[in-house]
Image (tube, rainbow, N blue to C red; front, top):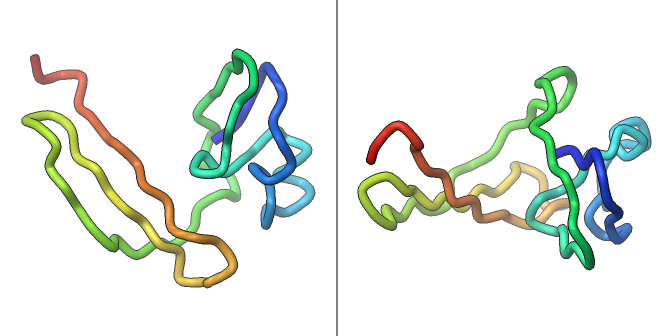
Length: 88
């Protein structure tokens, strides 16, 4: 994820390359905003990484919760809720 407005605690960028930190990139699973922030989806240049799906839970007809774990133990696993906006 990439923050375009607001501020974040250093823990949200722990483990990222300095070049990505300067671009406002952060780990969504580590962000604890203290005020309003604006988050953008970055382009995919240089931020692709592999992940292992640890669990998948269907929360309702258009929301899927994924727990992803990177192949490295340097970063802990993250849980994402994904939803489709094209289904009423």
